[in-house]
Length: 203
Image (cartoon, helix red, strand yellow):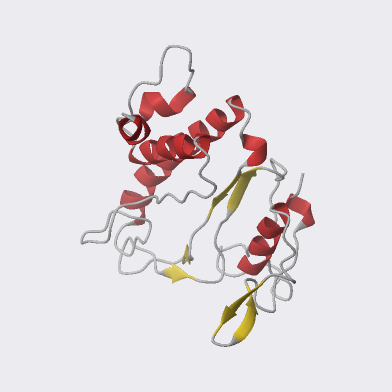
Protein backbone atom coordinates (compact mmCIF):
# COMPACT_ATOMS: atom_id res chain seq x y z
CA UNK A 1 0.00 0.00 0.00
CA UNK A 2 2.90 2.34 0.77
CA UNK A 3 4.35 1.91 -2.73
CA UNK A 4 0.90 2.20 -4.29
CA UNK A 5 0.29 5.45 -2.45
CA UNK A 6 3.70 6.77 -3.43
CA UNK A 7 3.78 5.85 -7.10
CA UNK A 8 0.20 5.00 -7.96
CA UNK A 9 -1.18 8.53 -7.71
CA UNK A 10 -3.74 7.33 -5.19
CA UNK A 11 -6.01 9.97 -3.57
CA UNK A 12 -4.40 11.61 -0.57
CA UNK A 13 -7.48 12.24 1.55
CA UNK A 14 -9.96 15.10 2.00
CA UNK A 15 -7.69 17.18 4.24
CA UNK A 16 -5.08 17.83 1.56
CA UNK A 17 -5.35 20.55 -1.04
CA UNK A 18 -2.91 19.46 -3.72
CA UNK A 19 -3.36 22.56 -5.92
CA UNK A 20 -2.79 21.91 -9.61
CA UNK A 21 -0.78 18.70 -9.39
CA UNK A 22 -3.49 16.18 -8.50
CA UNK A 23 -5.98 17.75 -10.89
CA UNK A 24 -3.56 17.40 -13.78
CA UNK A 25 -1.79 14.21 -12.76
CA UNK A 26 -3.85 11.91 -14.95
CA UNK A 27 -3.41 14.01 -18.07
CA UNK A 28 -0.04 15.71 -17.70
CA UNK A 29 2.94 13.39 -18.07
CA UNK A 30 5.33 15.80 -16.37
CA UNK A 31 2.78 16.64 -13.69
CA UNK A 32 2.71 13.01 -12.59
CA UNK A 33 6.48 13.08 -12.21
CA UNK A 34 6.27 16.27 -10.15
CA UNK A 35 3.69 14.66 -7.89
CA UNK A 36 5.89 11.61 -7.28
CA UNK A 37 8.88 13.92 -6.69
CA UNK A 38 6.99 15.84 -4.03
CA UNK A 39 5.88 12.62 -2.32
CA UNK A 40 9.45 11.35 -2.27
CA UNK A 41 10.63 14.60 -0.69
CA UNK A 42 7.88 14.37 1.91
CA UNK A 43 9.16 10.93 2.84
CA UNK A 44 12.69 12.14 3.42
CA UNK A 45 14.40 11.49 0.07
CA UNK A 46 17.16 14.09 -0.19
CA UNK A 47 17.74 14.16 -3.94
CA UNK A 48 15.13 13.65 -6.66
CA UNK A 49 15.69 13.94 -10.42
CA UNK A 50 12.84 13.92 -12.93
CA UNK A 51 12.94 14.09 -16.70
CA UNK A 52 10.84 16.12 -19.13
CA UNK A 53 10.34 14.61 -22.56
CA UNK A 54 10.04 11.14 -23.98
CA UNK A 55 12.74 8.76 -25.13
CA UNK A 56 14.45 9.28 -28.46
CA UNK A 57 12.79 7.94 -31.55
CA UNK A 58 11.71 9.13 -34.95
CA UNK A 59 9.88 11.36 -35.16
CA UNK A 60 11.19 12.72 -31.86
CA UNK A 61 8.92 13.81 -29.06
CA UNK A 62 11.41 15.53 -26.79
CA UNK A 63 13.37 18.74 -26.32
CA UNK A 64 16.14 17.58 -28.68
CA UNK A 65 14.04 18.81 -31.57
CA UNK A 66 16.04 18.58 -34.75
CA UNK A 67 12.91 18.05 -36.85
CA UNK A 68 10.14 20.38 -35.61
CA UNK A 69 10.57 22.77 -32.68
CA UNK A 70 7.00 24.05 -32.68
CA UNK A 71 5.50 20.56 -32.68
CA UNK A 72 7.74 19.32 -29.86
CA UNK A 73 8.46 22.30 -27.62
CA UNK A 74 4.92 23.67 -27.39
CA UNK A 75 3.31 20.68 -25.67
CA UNK A 76 6.41 19.97 -23.58
CA UNK A 77 6.57 23.57 -22.33
CA UNK A 78 2.86 23.57 -21.47
CA UNK A 79 3.17 20.34 -19.51
CA UNK A 80 6.26 21.55 -17.69
CA UNK A 81 4.65 24.88 -16.81
CA UNK A 82 1.66 23.20 -15.19
CA UNK A 83 3.67 20.56 -13.35
CA UNK A 84 6.41 22.92 -12.20
CA UNK A 85 3.95 25.53 -10.93
CA UNK A 86 2.03 22.85 -9.07
CA UNK A 87 5.20 21.44 -7.53
CA UNK A 88 6.32 24.84 -6.27
CA UNK A 89 2.88 25.62 -4.84
CA UNK A 90 2.64 22.22 -3.18
CA UNK A 91 6.05 22.57 -1.55
CA UNK A 92 5.25 26.10 -0.39
CA UNK A 93 1.89 24.99 1.01
CA UNK A 94 3.62 22.31 3.07
CA UNK A 95 6.39 24.58 4.32
CA UNK A 96 9.00 22.62 2.36
CA UNK A 97 9.99 25.12 -0.32
CA UNK A 98 12.46 27.05 1.81
CA UNK A 99 14.35 23.80 2.46
CA UNK A 100 14.25 22.53 -1.12
CA UNK A 101 16.40 23.74 -4.02
CA UNK A 102 14.69 23.23 -7.36
CA UNK A 103 16.82 23.37 -10.51
CA UNK A 104 15.54 23.09 -14.05
CA UNK A 105 18.46 22.58 -16.41
CA UNK A 106 19.54 21.08 -19.71
CA UNK A 107 22.75 20.08 -21.44
CA UNK A 108 22.48 22.71 -24.19
CA UNK A 109 20.09 25.12 -25.86
CA UNK A 110 18.83 25.35 -29.43
CA UNK A 111 20.33 27.39 -32.23
CA UNK A 112 18.49 30.58 -33.29
CA UNK A 113 18.56 29.41 -36.92
CA UNK A 114 16.60 26.60 -38.55
CA UNK A 115 17.99 23.14 -39.25
CA UNK A 116 16.50 21.20 -42.15
CA UNK A 117 13.24 23.11 -42.18
CA UNK A 118 11.49 23.42 -38.82
CA UNK A 119 14.10 21.95 -36.48
CA UNK A 120 16.95 23.50 -34.51
CA UNK A 121 20.44 22.14 -33.88
CA UNK A 122 22.28 22.14 -30.53
CA UNK A 123 23.51 25.43 -29.08
CA UNK A 124 26.26 24.84 -26.50
CA UNK A 125 26.88 28.56 -26.00
CA UNK A 126 23.69 29.76 -24.26
CA UNK A 127 20.80 27.99 -22.59
CA UNK A 128 18.49 28.43 -19.64
CA UNK A 129 18.78 27.24 -16.07
CA UNK A 130 16.20 28.34 -13.58
CA UNK A 131 16.08 27.87 -9.89
CA UNK A 132 13.53 28.19 -7.11
CA UNK A 133 13.24 27.40 -3.45
CA UNK A 134 15.76 27.31 -0.64
CA UNK A 135 17.99 30.36 -0.65
CA UNK A 136 17.10 31.51 -4.18
CA UNK A 137 15.81 35.03 -4.77
CA UNK A 138 12.62 34.94 -6.80
CA UNK A 139 11.89 37.09 -9.83
CA UNK A 140 15.45 37.84 -10.94
CA UNK A 141 17.45 36.93 -14.02
CA UNK A 142 21.21 36.71 -14.40
CA UNK A 143 23.37 36.38 -17.49
CA UNK A 144 22.25 37.61 -20.89
CA UNK A 145 22.57 36.28 -24.40
CA UNK A 146 23.07 38.38 -27.50
CA UNK A 147 20.01 39.57 -29.41
CA UNK A 148 19.83 36.31 -31.40
CA UNK A 149 20.14 33.96 -28.44
CA UNK A 150 23.32 32.57 -29.96
CA UNK A 151 26.19 33.48 -27.60
CA UNK A 152 26.62 35.24 -24.24
CA UNK A 153 26.25 39.01 -24.41
CA UNK A 154 29.33 39.43 -22.20
CA UNK A 155 31.72 37.00 -23.85
CA UNK A 156 34.60 37.97 -21.56
CA UNK A 157 32.66 37.12 -18.40
CA UNK A 158 29.85 34.68 -19.21
CA UNK A 159 27.80 32.92 -16.58
CA UNK A 160 28.83 29.27 -16.80
CA UNK A 161 27.43 26.00 -15.56
CA UNK A 162 30.33 25.91 -13.09
CA UNK A 163 28.90 29.08 -11.51
CA UNK A 164 25.49 27.46 -11.12
CA UNK A 165 27.12 24.43 -9.50
CA UNK A 166 29.21 26.62 -7.17
CA UNK A 167 26.09 28.53 -6.11
CA UNK A 168 24.07 25.38 -5.43
CA UNK A 169 26.94 23.92 -3.39
CA UNK A 170 27.08 27.18 -1.42
CA UNK A 171 23.36 26.89 -0.64
CA UNK A 172 24.03 23.36 0.60
CA UNK A 173 26.71 24.72 2.93
CA UNK A 174 29.64 23.44 0.87
CA UNK A 175 32.64 25.49 -0.27
CA UNK A 176 33.16 24.36 -3.86
CA UNK A 177 36.83 25.36 -3.75
CA UNK A 178 37.51 22.89 -0.93
CA UNK A 179 35.35 19.95 -2.02
CA UNK A 180 37.21 17.39 -4.11
CA UNK A 181 36.63 13.86 -5.34
CA UNK A 182 39.35 11.33 -6.12
CA UNK A 183 39.44 10.53 -9.84
CA UNK A 184 42.28 8.97 -11.83
CA UNK A 185 44.63 9.50 -8.87
CA UNK A 186 43.85 13.22 -8.78
CA UNK A 187 41.76 15.28 -6.36
CA UNK A 188 39.30 17.04 -8.62
CA UNK A 189 36.85 19.78 -7.77
CA UNK A 190 33.25 19.41 -8.91
CA UNK A 191 33.60 22.87 -10.43
CA UNK A 192 37.01 22.02 -11.95
CA UNK A 193 39.23 25.12 -11.77
CA UNK A 194 36.26 27.32 -12.61
CA UNK A 195 33.13 28.40 -10.82
CA UNK A 196 32.14 31.53 -8.94
CA UNK A 197 29.28 32.18 -6.58
CA UNK A 198 26.39 34.14 -8.16
CA UNK A 199 25.34 36.44 -5.29
CA UNK A 200 22.77 38.25 -7.45
CA UNK A 201 20.42 35.26 -7.38
CA UNK A 202 20.66 34.57 -3.65
CA UNK A 203 17.87 35.59 -1.28
